[in-house]
Image 1 (cartoon, rainbow, N blue to C red):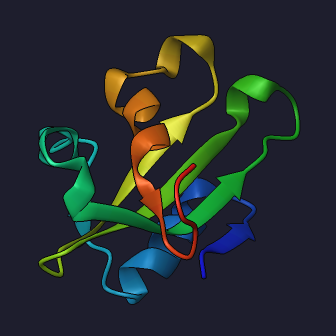
Image 2: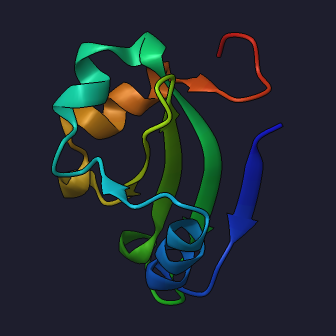
Length: 100
């Protein structure tokens, strides 16, 4: 089952995931899951909602590969923060769900 949490900040979510062994940075290595999406699944989703603006909102994904690599990807909600990889996350498998 996927685990979804709300935290006061992105840094707290990243600390929590690091404590669970999610220490690889998929933001700087996004080509790995873009090239082989079937080898990865989202196992944790941490959502941060800013107090002042929707531009402050972000989601931190805990992603695990079939070979055991565990890492994070941070995606913002602001229109200018949408990367190709952030849009690509929609196609990744979510643990506990069949299809999207």
